[in-house]
Length: 424
Ligand SMILES: CC(C)[C@H](C(=O)O)[C@@H](O)C(=O)O
Ligand code: SF4
Image (cartoon, rainbow, N blue to C red; front, side, top):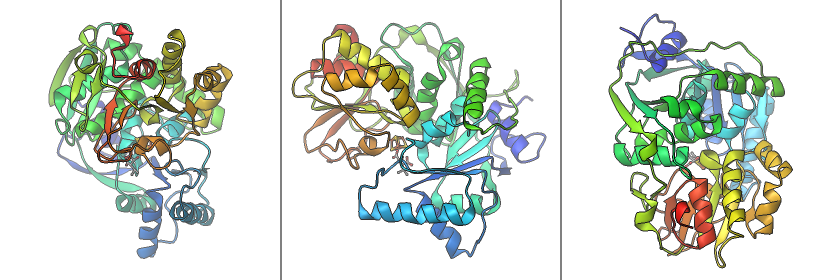
């Protein structure tokens, strides 16, 4: 019997010819990432166990993105601890406060390649599956095991295949596709399963749009999200490696023709409409027209889900076309990384956001998780391009968050209320 892409990657990483769902394997890790929030616990756990040297200082990536620049004494202390660790261990790839959100920075700097096993102490590590890697979020203490040994055990997950075909309608993006899928599957419908996205619609998508989809696999319980690598993937990965001096050989792994899936969903792209994930769960998905008309206070455009250049471009186009944002609405824009910020700056996008009265922040997680900027007060309503709308995610437990695409979010900023972008 054939194997899926995930089974093949895990078989290779654990030195086996074949694996099946449910098998327990000990896999070699290619890339291990921690950030400023999860790193300190990993480091302290290593210390507790008396581990003096990490297994490979070139395979660990340490990055500060959640509280940057430090937003409290505690955050500054975490940064100090991690910088010291980086020095002591000779960690080769360390990105201090300036580079942006880990799930954008790792791919753009060439740290992710097809066929690799990537673990990150962050739940949205599944994003990297967009490049054909097996990538999953793990806890800080599991990460200490990885730092010490370079290995981690996995139960080989079953795979759900989402076959997406047909043309997306105007104003409908990959975010509407993934939100619609989560609405159908439910927040725990894919628990411990690999969510594989394929079909002609996915093939046509940019790498950025694909990342938006794999990013949210965890929001339906998925162990990972993954897309088989194609020419676009290989070109993206090679260019990123070349630009940043991270070149290394990699193997393009794809699933077998006769691979077996636990479930197959047939998704017709042309039936998908602009949607919102309504408070307070990601699977509470409604068509934009069903909830239109509700006044909003804030719009957040950014995050590892939708803070890339194409997202910023889509958003500013809508705002510009309609001559600006509604009075009384705050719009917070956070490019996902310094590189994406610079590209947007060069294209004049940042200048336009500023001209229309949006607040543009440094690349970070801040507004996405309500830590430093863009915190919501009781009763406030926010449209966010991020991936979570849980109670209290961006501040007050009494605030409401509606998740949407950058096009829909921008349309809401223009109108000052929830709206379907086609009805502006
Ligand atoms: C702070 C971090 C551990 C967390 C995660 O793992 O996802 C954050 O990135 C988030 O999106 O809520
Ligand atoms: S941008 Fe948001 S979802 Fe992504 S890693 Fe940061 S806090 Fe988590």
